[in-house]
Image (cartoon, rainbow, N blue to C red; front, side):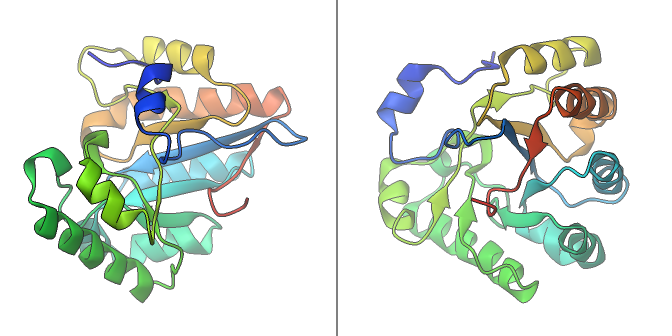
Length: 211
């Protein structure tokens, strides 16, 4: 069970987190991709974005950065932003405070080794404790999402993934797709059509570091 559009009450409980971006003079979408980088799918995503001169933010798992440094460098070289998704994709609700903070730091070290200095974090599964937030918010922008594609779910087919994501996306939306094998079939179908649809409507696609 998931919501394609993040309920207002969830945002109300966590107002210190970033759920969407301010609306500018031009309609803008902030595409984000969780879990990579990985061989194959990351390059497909990059090629798709290039077709429409779209930029995105990749919330990376630190161990994937370490294993796939060349792919990570390619993401940067093509004008996108890498951000923190913890080193081992930890569930903050099931991880001690100290271990969680250390795992975030390990991922940040990998990012800084790649020249990514801005501290932007998305907690895996969207699960992070209030204590963890209180410690991390001092240094990190903690980014959640406005629109969840649901691409990772075996209960959603590619057509529904596309249609439901398009339906709830508006100006300023932070949209979450996944850069992992579970999501591959849905991403390969939905992402090109999603970006084309909004590109033709005059939207621009920016990274979270462009504002």
